Length: 176
Image (cartoon, rainbow, N blue to C red; front, side):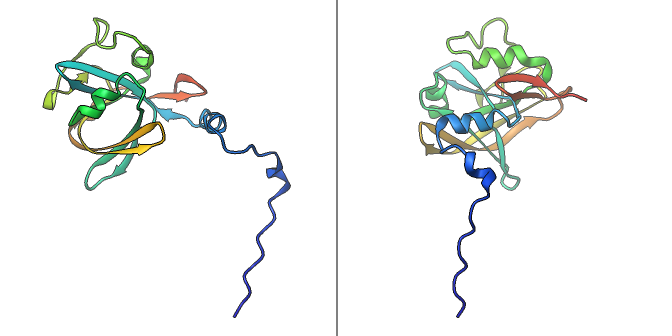
């Protein structure tokens, strides 16, 4: 029988690492460029929506995606109560739209926002790079947030342009 190996000593370069904290996580993820999406829902005859940078592909078969939302967000009740949601991939020409849907208290579906009711009554935004309507499969508790897992049921990937990114706390375009 072989004796277990002794644990490796950490490299001296890790001696300056910070302890895990919300500030550390935010600081690290400011270095991570993420695509920008707007999530929409309809509840009680009223549209709701928010900007998300947490969108991920989960599975191709079945076609699942995920995103997170804080339970204190103004759009949380609509996301919590809706069976279907809209997922919109924004283009670099839509910085103002991303900012509008990110701003607390904004009139997100006012005259400045072009949209129409899509499949299952979900608000679908005009001029996006791509959109999906998804059926919510799960709402998983994760701290003060929920991870929403949803299955794509309809959509259109045919928008034109380049994606909008979020990096260092700002909306950015790709550089050539």
